[in-house]
Structure formats: structure tokens, C-alpha cells
Length: 109
Image 1 (tube, rainbow, N blue to C red):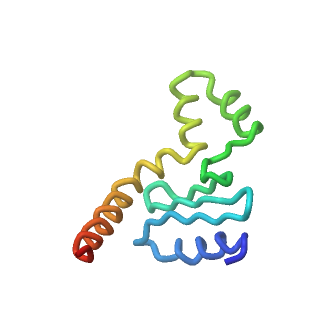
Image 2: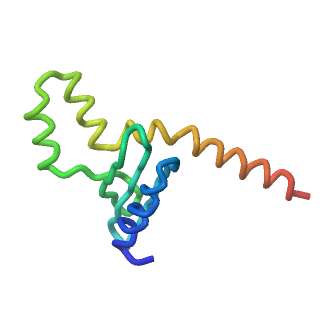
């Protein structure tokens, strides 16, 4: 799908309140990643061609200015990078990998 389609897909998926999901879209050098859980809401991050989340200088400056206590700054930076969403979704990724491994074992001769 074309870049920009992700936001439309995310809006549709969010309307199903029981879903949790992760969606990535790329062009040649950049893209977006979306995480959604009912508990945390929606996260959207910019990503580079390697899938790494990119945080702008302005967002970093704002986080530093608003969170002068180190523990608050750490939490703010982790949120900017989508860490709470990533941690929440990780167990589901492991299940997917384990299921693929089990299927591969069944298919191997």
C-alpha cells in the first residue's frame, strides 16, 4: 500500500476496541510505526530504513525541558520511543515466532 495508508488502516483497526496491533509502513528511506493497545492508546513514531524509531530534536528538547527530574526524563524519553507499547506487545510477538517455528517443524521432512 502507499505511504500514508497506515493512518487510515490504524483508524479502522482502532474502532475495534478488542484489538491490539502493530503496523509499519515504509518507503525507501523512512516510514511510520504504529502501536495500539486499549490500555496505552495509540503511539505513532517515525522510523528509518532499518526500522529504528527516530525522535526529533524538538521532541527531545521538550522532554528535557518538561522533565527536569531524571526519573521523569527517563520515562518521557521511553514514551517518545514507544517503549511501553513495545513492552506490552512483545509477548505477542514471541507467540507468533513460536507458532511459526512449530509449523516449520511439522513441515520439515
